Image (spheres, rainbow, N blue to C red):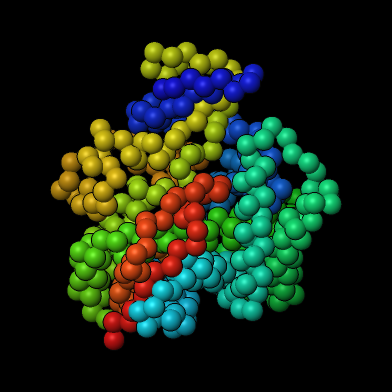
Length: 409
């Protein structure tokens, strides 16, 4: 535990797994998330389950949780497979340098839209990608300042336009769905939200539906794309691990597409994703908390108002829990490997505010990774240096990642 003084604020950084669990699980009801972070994210996400607190958050989480449980997520595996098939068909696979980060971003955007609104990204892909980059850069720039200029200031016009485009895109899908008779609605996430609106219009207003769709779209594709980007790098830089994962995929799937039942059998492939998330957690710092009641952690007595940060990447790179912490070793997560201490692996956080979409993310990443290995070999372009992680709200390569992608057939 490390104490930091930031002007008038006192912040404690907690990097001990047991104390992290004590904070986020045992004392979860004695904290809120950092107000500045919530304010910045709310300008894009609105009042969704991601940005609300207290009873409002608890009720949203309770109602939404069934849609993101493992069985509910597995219902969408055929849609994930179909969207991935379409996107991989367009990949350039002649062994030349390929913009795999951009391709994976487009793919995960298409996948999340299939699950959310039963439609693909289509001709809006480039415009939406540009808008997302603009919003992400603006959010990152504002996050760590105590205050920021209002969004109506002239120099913030790019952010305003990007945010308006995103909300118009989501709002358009909502209105289009409402024009259809109920019996014609496909069974997707938007339909489930709109059924809540029809049942409890005062609680689940159309703005509330749109806010949840926005969070699902933004969080559902970006973090998945970034993890898959780092996974692709790890596969390219570790050809033996890539070959082992591919052999497993070929043995389990026998040339067929992944199914919900096959996901749990792809154990080594899952280990490569877990090891990727350990090395490159897309949320290297969990949402900072502020204590609303005194909390005792270890030998420390923390007063009301203390900020508490959980540096996930520091924990994930601690040699006490992970020998050779900077090496890519998927066998760390094998069933027969030594047990990893609880609280030492936090790619989705922990406690009541653990990532709502963790089951969806794992299913989506496993399907996409398996289908990539079925069709392509990944390698590092000659002379390329390892990508440098950069914190821009999430952890991503400092420059867009390009890899050599060669078709296997």
